[in-house]
Structure formats: structure tokens, C-alpha cells
Image (tube, rainbow, N blue to C red; front, top):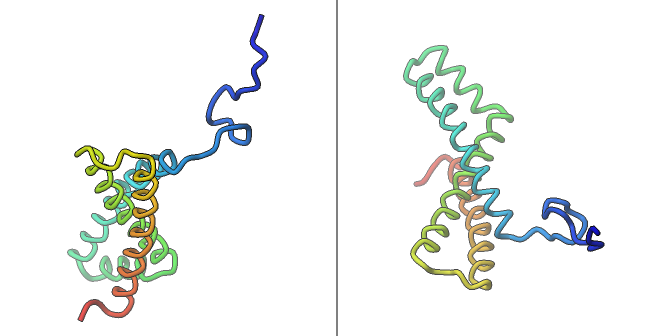
Length: 133
């Protein structure tokens, strides 16, 4: 006879008993940010080629990156880059055998998130103010 347990069949059946954890969310975000950065590399290549070709190509690249949608896209890419960088450093620490205790895992996760937001905002503040002095 089949078991009468009320447990979910899969952890993806949210809303029952499974609660998302920072470790699983950050793992998924690390993968997604890596995919986004891979696609962004194609856009970066287009931008470099457009600037190198000059003329109307450079004007087009400038118009795209200066538009509101272009700036939002660049902001999201820089956010993904900073997240992927800091979370990658966190993974390197894990590879070296550091930070496996649960309080350390949570502390490093929140540190990665804080550093991501702060560094992205500083990067954009410097970029929008005309660069470093």
C-alpha cells in the first residue's frame, strides 16, 4: 500500500514545506550571472568593433550604450560581473577549505551580496561623475 506521507515529492514544489536557502539561491544566481556574462561578451565584442571601425558604427554604439535601455543593460551586466567576482572568491575560499560552518556560509553569502551592491553603486557613481580624479 502506498505511503500516506504528506511530504512534498520534490523540493521544487514550493509553498508546501521547502524553504529556499541562501546557498541554493546564490548557487543559481552564480550560474545565471555566468551565462549573462557569456552573452555580454558578445555585446562587448560588438561595442569594441564598432568603436574600432569608427564613423557611423561608433555613433551607433554610443547611441545604444547612452540610451536608457543601454544604461540599464550595462548596470545589470556590471551587477552580474561584481556578483560573479565576489561569489567566485567565496568559492575559492571554499576550495581552500575555509568557511564551511553554517554561520560562516551565511555570513559570506550576505557579505557577497553587500559587496556586490556597494561595488556596483561605487562603479556607477564614479562612471557617472566623469571617472576617477
